[in-house]
Length: 414
Ligand SMILES: Cc1cc2nc3c(=O)[nH]c(=O)nc-3n(C[C@H](O)[C@H](O)[C@H](O)COP(=O)(O)O)c2cc1C
Image 1 (cartoon, rainbow, N blue to C red):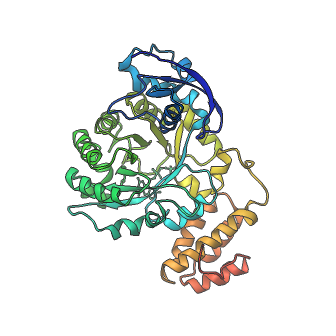
Image 2: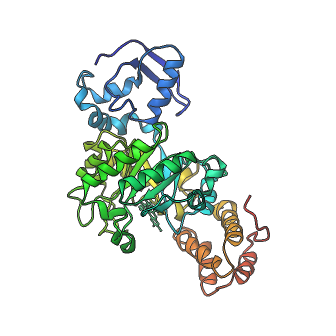
Image 3: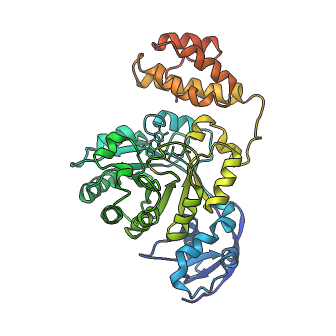
């Protein structure tokens, strides 16, 4: 392919910085006419609107960093991915991970109000042998009724888990009609119960099946709907990680999220950033790194060692709701009034929403769970956690929280 036409400088709406574009029929475009990075998609549209006539827009700097001859079509994906860390730093995305039993719509709402996430994902929805009714999807992802966004406006993607290509595809088609912000496939869940039924990470020994699943779902989902997969590195070891990633990519996913652990690793640190890097280099779709990012230092190390521009935050975001702002450089590493000014009101809002959603006997467990994470950073959370731990009824918890100065009165979060 040949570089064409125009180099131009313009303001990119997606990153808000000045970029040099080149409009080109360009080999960074790969397979089936999709683009390697959503930012390119936006740029392409801009380029087209301005009548540049090229098929793709590419930052000059990427070209420099890659240092490849653009005629080398065969090297598109890996070269792009190798170059990614340097040249796309400014437009990297930060995403909120799916966490079943932890980050439901209430916590997604509370966390995304802190701002900064490009998108988040709901907990997995298990698919076995039937097409689920719409209410099953809406129950796990109520944001669908809000244009698939949290109240703060963060897009929410929906995640399916299963092992039958046709059934997953049929469910994906139904989900697609609800217009979620995207559809993801789960190949990471390590729970024995799930794995026994061949769900989640259990399939990481069957790359050929992964390819068939991805292809079936791809065919069922409109191409304008982002379609991703989230995988661990393997079952007992990472020996087939690359095969699995390539299988998913060959099936037509748009992006791949890689949690840097095997199923056997469960949630034990460290996350294997070196393996995420290997996967990234081996596939022609953008790879999103995930695992063990709790601080700014972790985030920097994760990006450096994986080479991924985009990072998905899991428990680190639960433990420190301000992490997203710290990573965006919007707040200092540690401000003295964070608890009173930011976290305590968020805990109160969370509690009010939990109270409205679940029974008075179930509610305390949800709060204990979140405080259990928050206490890693805030002593106030540790005190509350300690006080609330013996309590089993929401009314008792109300009293403790009110005594600690939290506004528990209102029962609606919005
Ligand atoms: C309580 C809990 C529930 C999770 N549920 C899901 C899930 O539904 N779908 C999924 O793909 N990953 C799930 N995960 C994995 C996370 O999305 C993420 O990959 C993992 O926690 C590693 O990231 P971290 O080290 O930043 O937490 C879950 C993790 C936790 C701790």
